[in-house]
Image (cartoon, rainbow, N blue to C red; front, side):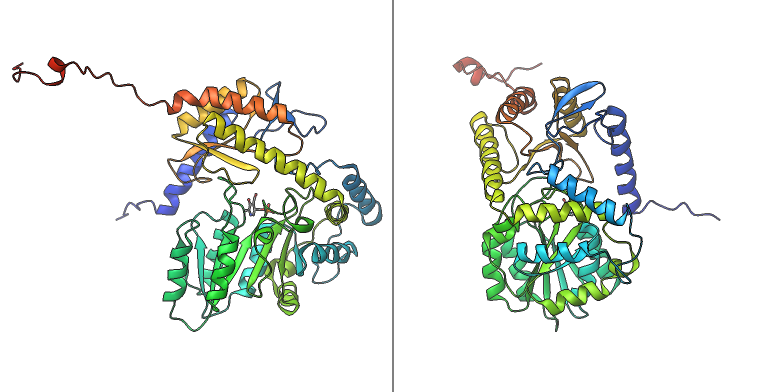
Length: 427
Ligand SMILES: Cc1ncc(COP(=O)(O)O)c(C=O)c1O
């Protein structure tokens, strides 16, 4: 007799994801191909209409910088479009050129990986040893959550801790009775709400708990903040011998790739030597390495401070205007990401389409990118977005979202007779 199998939690989540993703694609919210022939950072063409682009993560506007393009062209001329070998065998010299520059940017030892996700999958199974425990922030990026599944499969206990709740993390560290260490996995800038990790407080936590290690994914904070662009986390703390920072080269940096930085050169060497995707997978392509080297040179030059300062003024402008207008954004931290939570998928879709009609593209977001029931619009800014464009977008967002948050008007008759009926009335 065949027994009906009840769907697992994983199945149900996948079905919800499928439902949201296909609806979003049909509505033109997600998985759209832009219709531009040429990249222009501040806008895209979708459905025949030019829209101001508030969905790009090329924060410092380096994605089409001539110097990065030349770096990519030179690399292709020398080494072709693909140097197809695992770095475990051979790599092109641009690997060394980029590593040296990134080590200077971070002031630490570095390991390169083709993406940030692969950086986590290379580093964490090497860093976290049997007997250790992992704590992961409940809203840390999906790439970190995926890496914890691998760790769990290796027998490492993994526990979620409430978002940015340092007291809860400290309790979990204090209560750990194993022989090993405790790793806390966090983001530097949380990619949907744009809030920051509490770097300075975590620094103090590291000092108080010698068993604690912090692994921070600063993919969204790298480049536009910190000395030489080393990121939001290191801009607010200093290197600690039990701190590891991972970052991505595909956002602010204007190239592609991932990097893991740590103070211990022997540990970095071990990650590079045995981190699984760095043996069993391919390299960063020549064009990306060439662009990244050119970007690193900009990050090591005086130009960076000017770009960072101009960009931070733009971030402050968003925070000021949003606060003045009273737009209920989730967080107003000094980062280039903001989130307007609306709750239902339908409200999110309505506001997305309204904004699009008025000429603005924002990131319509729903489960599993955010928890179920917390659908909303996420937006980012880059140096491509002018102050004027930002002001116009926020004015429109304010106008269009206001009715969605308006309190329900209940008319109460406060005249004495109405407020206190003399006698109960029978109906
Ligand atoms: C915080 C964070 N980490 C990692 C990633 C994945 O980066 P990559 O595409 O380099 O794997 C993202 C993606 O956008 C992210 O937001």
